[in-house]
Image 1 (cartoon, protein in one colour):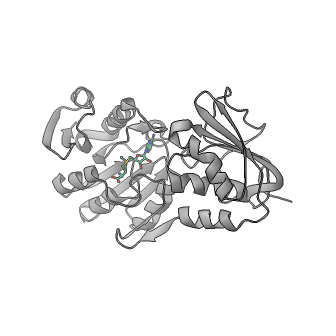
Image 2: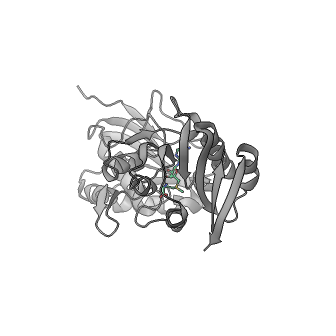
Image 3: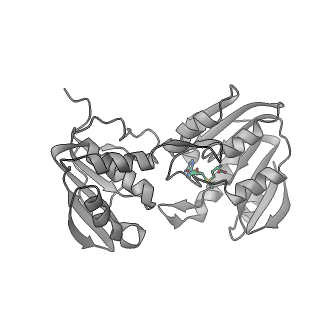
Length: 305
Ligand SMILES: C[S@@+](CC[C@H](N)C(=O)[O-])C[C@H]1O[C@@H](n2cnc3c(N)ncnc32)[C@H](O)[C@@H]1O
C-alpha cells in the first residue's frame, strides 16, 4: 500500500488559474507543517499542482521532485508568472524528459506534463538542488533558501555592530543560522530560539547550529504557538518579500513580534535595507531607538523596550 496521498499541491494557486486536486496535501517548504515532497514515495501521486518557485536551481529541483513522485500515468500541472520563471517552465520540463502542453492565462504560463519513462535527468536536477555543505561558507545550505551561497551583506553588517549578548533571546527569520551562530559565541547567552518559515532553512540551521542552548522551530513568526516571552534580546534581519514581491508589512510585523517577546529593558538588534520604513514602528513599540550607522545600503538599529 502506498503511504503517500494521491494528490499534492505546492504553494497557493488561485482558482482562476488552475483547480487544486481534491484532497491534495500541501508540500510547500514555505508552509510550516506541510508534508515533505521529498519524503513522498516515488511513482505514488495521481496528480500534482505546483506554483513553481522563481530561482532556477530551486525550480528545477521542485519540478524534478514532483516528477519523481508522480505515478506513471499521473499528471503534473506546473505554473508560474511569465516574468518569474513561467517562460522557462516548458524548457525545464523538456530538459527533464517531460515535454508539456503549455497554455497562458492571466500573465502566467501553465504547463501540463506526465512522468518521463527515463528518470536520469530528474535525478540530476534533484542532485543539483539538494542540500549540501558549502566548504567556503562552512555551512549546510540549499538553493532556494535566503542568500543560500553567501553571507548576506546586511547580516554581515549587523554582526559587525552588535555586541556580545546576554541571557535568553531569539533570532527571528534565522535562515541558515548565520546570525544565531554568532550570537551563541557569547557564553553569557543561556538560550536562543531560532524561527524560520522555510523548512529547508530550518533543516540546514539544525545542522549549522549544533548547540544545546538552541531551540530551532519551523514556524511563521507572525503566528507562533508558544512564542517565547520575557526575552533579554532579539536579533533579526527581517524578510520583506512574499512570493517575490516586496511586502513592507512583513518586516513591520516582525518588529511588533520582537517587541511582544522582549521583557521591559530587553533589546532588539535589527538590520534592514536603507529604503525600508521601519523607524515609525520601532518608535511606536520601543522606549529608545539608537541608529548604529548606515553602510552599503543597510541600516542597523538597537531598540530598547
Ligand atoms: C532576510 S532573511 C535573513 C536570514 C538570516 N537571518 C540571515 O541573516 O542570513 C529573512 C528570513 O526570514 C524568513 N521568513 C520569511 N517570512 C517569514 C515568516 N513569516 N516567518 C518566519 N520566517 C520568515 C525567510 O525564510 C528568511 O530566511
